[in-house]
Length: 109
Length: 120
Image 1 (tube, chains in turn cyan, yellow):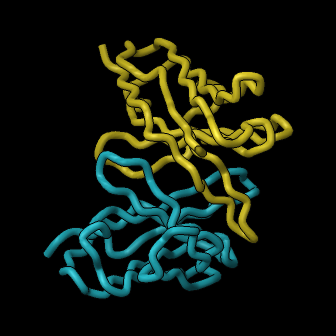
Image 2 (tube, one colour):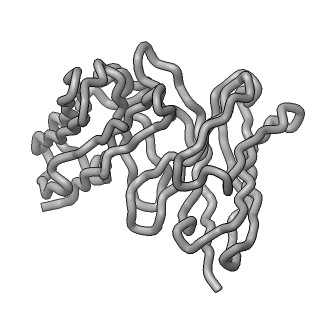
């Protein structure tokens, strides 16, 4: 089974900062990766699919990149509404399962 | 308007059963892949189950044999029958639509979630 790890597990940042979150897969997964944002008490929100495709309505300060085993989510200029936990996610056809990374919490410095 | 709304959560004793519902509006459950994802208090996201348009179903190992996903196309509703519940099943349960990307299957629409607490 493919495992996803994320680093860092948490990051403290200030408004306007550039934040980079990494997701690593235990084996190559091409570009089959999605990123989500979850604000406390709310459902997750899909930000990026296929490693780098921005979902409709998601601000352009969010950027996804990578392929194979190493992926990155970058927030170019942190805004107040960006303080949240971010998860990466992969679907594997065999064994048939969806896997989430452990999450990265972005909080205020 | 595209919307998912889960109901049916609550407090249940260990070994008990519960049935969650997810009412869907704005698209058809019969022609979309639908899934359940849960989140234990203070923990990360855990995929639970998926149902495909051809009624194929798949489950996480942690729930296989105890939880059953189904849908009622006439009511445009997704269900999760939960049996033999344990404290480890305590979580917020989200229903979500599966988006088929170029390579990634992702969850593009989520409900607000319903809390299930298994405790005596």
